[in-house]
Each structure stands twice: as C-alpha cells, then as structure tokens.
Image 1: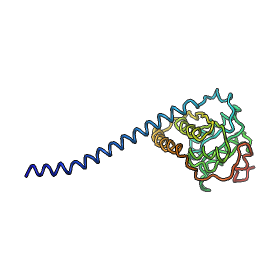
Image 2: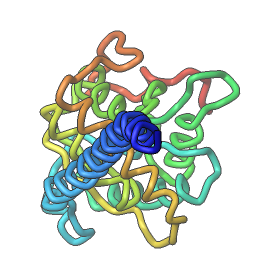
Image 3: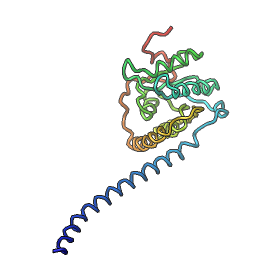
Length: 230
C-alpha cells in the first residue's frame, strides 16, 4: 500500500515540477531580454551623446525637448538645458514634444511659453501636441515635422532610449544630457522596462496614435499654436 501511495505522489509531483521549471525558464528568459536589450541600447546610443563644448560644432534641423509633468523639476531641467543648447547656435528651431491629450493636461504650451519668456522668437518654437511617448515623439518628428537631424534634450537615463528610437527611425539624432539633479532609483527600473518595449517597437515600427498633415520644421512655429499669443 505504501508503494502505491508513493507512486501516486510522484505522479502528482511531476506535472508540478514541470510547471515550476517552465515558469523559472520564462523568468530567466525575460530577465535576459531586459539585460541584453538595455545593454545594447545604452551601448548603441552612448556614442551619439554630446558634451556642451561639442554642440557649437554641429548643426541640427531642431533641438527637441521632451516633455514631462508640467512644473516638475524634471521638465524644468529639460527646458533649462534645451535653452542652453539653443544659445550655442547649433539650431534655430526648438521642438517641444509632449502630452497635450486633453484641454486640462497641456505640457507643450507651458514649454513654449518658457522658451518665449526667455527670449526665443515664438516663430522658432514648434509644439508637438501628440508626443505621448518617446517613440511617438521621434516618429512624429520625422513624419509630421519632416526633421532629418536633431539634438534631443532629456535626462541621461532617458536619453539613451530617445536617441536609439530616433536613429532606428532613420533620424540623424544626437543627445545632450539635461542633468544636475538626482532622481529616484525607481525611474531607472521603469526605464529598463521601457527600453525593452521600445526595442521591440523599433523592430516593427508601428504608427503613432496620431500623424496628420505635415508641418515642416523649416516653416513657422505659429502653425502649431492652439492659443493666441501676445
């Protein structure tokens, strides 16, 4: 009787072991994907990140400042460094790309107002109202604003992915670090996952949420205005 009971337990245990092994294998493969995608993306993008002293020797169609929550230290820092880059003369145009998905949530008008209030000619500041993600911002820069070369301004941890996305979409893109503040470690965790997502997106290249008519970066930034400016 004992032998029969032991055999029954062994039979029941085998499927459970298989399930545990499969789950462990999937977890290991996912971890490897995250590590490999992150390592490759950072290694690829790192060589396209410029120092402040290198900016004046380059010429870009635009400087893209990526959006963040309005009034946050992160966005303030991006805007500050975006203007620093603009003042080097490496581009005459600023492209503010962020989320303006509803009337009550508007990153890009805040960003344009910041630039104009700091002496940038309003016609030289474009707004991408549908830059809902880093990938979409790059796709729309290419297809809506007809950008071919640009300098991307954002924090270091985010810059690798932004430059990678832009270059994989065919843009001659470089990055400039907006960084003198420290950010929570959780940002790096979220970014590690986002890099995997964009790694896949850059293989299949899905269209962004919105495209629309072309607004060439060589034209006037007023074409992107949705409110009257003084």
